[in-house]
Length: 272
Image 1 (cartoon, rainbow, N blue to C red):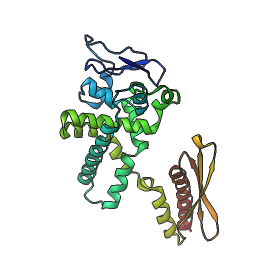
Image 2 (spheres, rainbow, N blue to C red):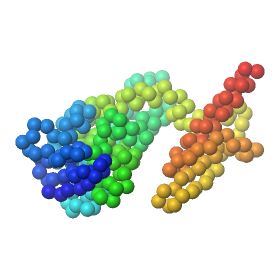
Image 3 (cartoon, rainbow, N blue to C red):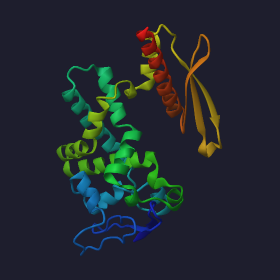
């Protein structure tokens, strides 16, 4: 039996080739085969399905754990599969619910609903999956159990595992349990679905040119912070500023602030 540090609190979790073993929740020893309930029962209850222990362990195993434990399969193939199932189910749901929307509108809603931000929030707040993830020591010490990229991957890998064991109908049901609330929310978000496009549209409504983004980067290579300024190219007026851990996130934050500034400006013109 291999042991690894569980990322949430540095307790021990186990990965075993035996079907009777599953990852342990925070502060809990691996379940014995005679136990009436496994530590992962709460997670499976949220999913509303069953996944055989060996497959469940794989779905929760990060590549860093595999690198430290030869022969331990990680979740990447399941994630690949789950991503496709998630996109299919979210697409058919939006297509059915919004017959009046065009392809571009539907694509924006889907992108927001299955984004890293949205899926990691589901993993944290609905699934509470962090304590179950099997990570290598280095990844665990760097807070891997709460990294949005890993949490997003885990949601997709669990969907993939459900598909492998039960097929598309059960996987579809799991996707609905996880993201229907999010799909409902994004259908009402308006400009928040795509701040950059919404900013361009707002600028055109006011007779302005397309805003441009001026970028700056600070911090060490392993922890860079990107800062974006949304400006009007004709006079270099700064409409909004935003920062983030990637260029895209910084630009979206700047676009959001800039859109609100122009919206207030247009509202002021309307009153006059």
